[in-house]
Image 1 (cartoon, helix red, strand yellow):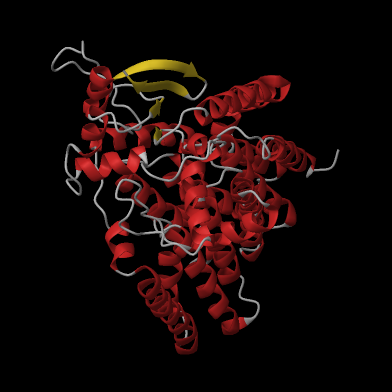
Image 2: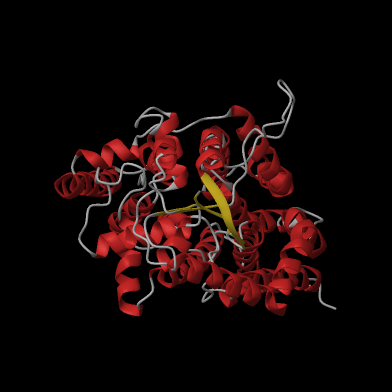
Length: 485
């Protein structure tokens, strides 16, 4: 066997694993089942965008949009063409993940890595996102769409072919990403600081001039179309729970500790002042931002996507650096590749098991049960509150109340405390669909230590109002259905 076989075979195996994990969201892309809470919420916004309605208007104070607007128009345009907003969002999400993987490979090549090293970076990005974040990949949500724009911009930035002329396009891609999701700050910040620090005057002028011009244009257009409502919603306060942040951070670091350790050592030992330094800054900043944001209500594993991508981008260059050390060769590179994937390999039985169970018929069964709930909800006239917004959308119910947004608005005193419970007390809602449980059960001992719930979409007083004014009428795959009684 040739000396390089161990490393090549290892990378080939990891790439096949990544493709197998990515196949899962690809195969389920057309299901009618709601894959994530955000799918229906985004579809409502995309429909409003295509109808020419405001995305930030005050006529729906309990359906709060705190995302930038671009993704709703991009997905909305494709959705209008194919006749399905949710499918359009899912397809663009899959495309974005492919772009992220390709960008990781391009960054590795720009750092001087070989093609096999670039494959390692691409497979690490594809595998970690598909394995750790199956509820985001191929889902109608703007997070990965934003990351796709940013990763493409960063790959173009570190690849200096094209000279300074490439920088306006980099700025445009960064702007597009931030106009899809505003919390993906790490890559634009790293590139901007590097360019200010090390760039020529012409490069600074082209990049910063284009970026500032795009920012000014975006603000003018947004203000003209949406007015102060955009800024009010974007900056709306939300609950912050430090304990919740510690739990989420611990969960994610448990999965990512091996690649973070490997890439951290590579950055510290292989300091070349080039791309590895940028990747180290990207990883450090992404972790700092993720840990800081992790306690915010509604934040999930997506806040750690940048950390996953940073590790993946640096995996190929780390293998190339290791290969160049005296006495080290393919076996050492193979070991590095396996360590970078250690968390994913340990997680693989869960991820592939879910894939197998769904493809064996469970997904079809759950889809049929979801459609049964849709059919039942259609038979109930009048307004509905759905924790599953896609359920309400498919049942023809208008956009009205977003459980998460309404709870945050009430908790942070942006609307009266009895806005939602008052509706229930007066029995103004025809049906309430809910899957959540109380954050604090009625029989919970005072002062008892308990694991805080990941998400709180309804406060406990809503459950009190349901107990007093509503009766349980149906239990389905989307949860419990209550009607006045």
